[in-house]
Image (tube, rainbow, N blue to C red; front, side, top):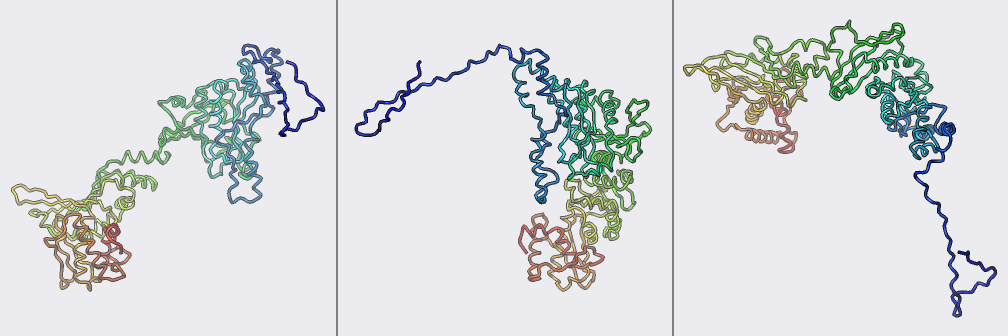
Length: 600
């Protein structure tokens, strides 16, 4: 179609008037030229060139003179460790450098990446140049602390990510220069397991891998160059040979743990920085199975005639308990000491069912053993009396036991052993023809001695009765808190009856074999006593209600000052008065109930 004609210098009519009779202008049609789609079966222009030219193009696009740095994206945080919200204005430069760190460390291959997507032939030809003509260096950012050797895991992830292309690599180096010095607070051991697992599945890659101490270092704000001067560099040649002995030759037979049914979770190594200088830290390997199990042992490194070999040390025949990690030590102690029934006979001064050796290793293991005993063992303390009316010699032996090392196991660890078996205190009356109702036991000192024990402690009273032809044993059990609350009721009644006697010595509290207080008597005979009547509360709810009523009445009688004064010390030898005994029982058993019942 011929192009339309343009009229030049023709008068332009005024439009919109009454005599506007102009016709519409001609429509100009412009055709757009479009290229035809390429033939998908047609060969690429690059493939028509000779192989020498194609390889030259690949060399220009993909080959680099310097090593290609491999960094983990998760480690490329844009905030340097030496900058924070309180940083000086001079540190702004460091922040800017850290913010563009990812851009500076991203290798630009121009249009090479797009070329890889053109066709399969070009992809396979160019990928060989990319991986085969370059040196890849696995490292970490210089503006972040690297205390755990993250480049070991990064190297393993890189080899896995490129799949079979890893066999095209001619040189893969792991930079050990960017590693925090040994005096860094977060410095840990090198974990070889991720890299070892990859190399076990791809054994052909190991000859191409090496460690180096290149020019890379941490940024000066993190670690000054003088810090590296004080600590020798990691012996990378020796480290490479150790890795070769572990992975390729499998001197320590660790490859079997790479299978799923024998999965190891970590393989850490600590070694001397310089093998020619003797030091206090021998070469060690840590093997960890699961999240808790861990074992380490010393191994020998034989470098005779230039050949390196590894072997477990044979001169050390026994592995002592203190060489194991804390988690393993605790598990062994739990296995040895768990679910034990331990009986202390305070009269004969004997103990049965306890592995004393576990408490005699050293202070550290004694603490572990005590915690295991308190959380899982059943303690029974046995005392014997031969009189139907007794105070068990004022419970002096029970006091000595509670203040000793065995009693401390219960008191010191009671705060975190709520689910532990309760302590059982056995009060045995070896007096024939005596029933539980006929017993009289003075428990005032018993209450003071047992104030550190858990409320769930069981008090078991037993005696022999021969009223029938055959002697029978009567047994009654109650918990310690119930026993104390029963005594509290009678003490409260005595405090209300004789308020002027509060500073007198604490009265004697007599209970029978069922744990029921029968009488509270002053030490002075003329002061009188109070006996429990038939209306004494028996159930837990009745004890609760009666105790709160007594607390309210006594507090009201003392006015705005609230509760009666009682000393901070709960030692009856220092302050043995009715006031202190009543206040002690209230503090032990009624504070939580007060908050639920009313506010002082």
